Amino acid sequence: MNETIPDKATIFSWLEEIKDPEVPVLSIIDLGIVRDIHLQDANLEIVITPTYSGCPAMDMIASLIKMEMAAHGYPGARITTILSPAWTTDWMTEKGKQQLKEYGIAPPLPKQQGCDQRLFQEAEAVQCPRCGSYHTQRISEFGSTACKALYQCDDCREPFDYFKCH
Image (cartoon, rainbow, N blue to C red; front, side, top):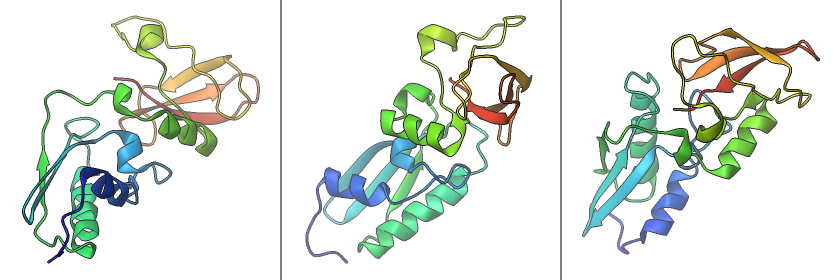
């Protein structure tokens, strides 16, 4: 058991080391799924919210959190998943959005520009993360994971994932 009680900032820095299994360029902090940390005496609870309620990566993320906390002296850390309020791309860090772009995934657009998706609404104008063109088209509503859509650039002709806003 850990002798000194860390502050929340220290625990957040430990969690920054955990990468999302589906998008390994992002930490779970940059992704914005860590909602809160409760530490009382030696009892540690990490509260997380999935990017969507059926996200298959959440079990792996919870296991990774438990392993990281055990490595820092908290083998009994409890992981609590909450679904409300629902996760939103607004919770992602700007650093995380930039990392997505550098990795080749178009980051989510600001909500005021395109997150209000309605039936028969035109696809968002998404910037190609490779060449910067906005001449892109949605190929499929779902990309490599359900939280991403598949786009293709009309200029450089490269396909790319777009991290959908919600």
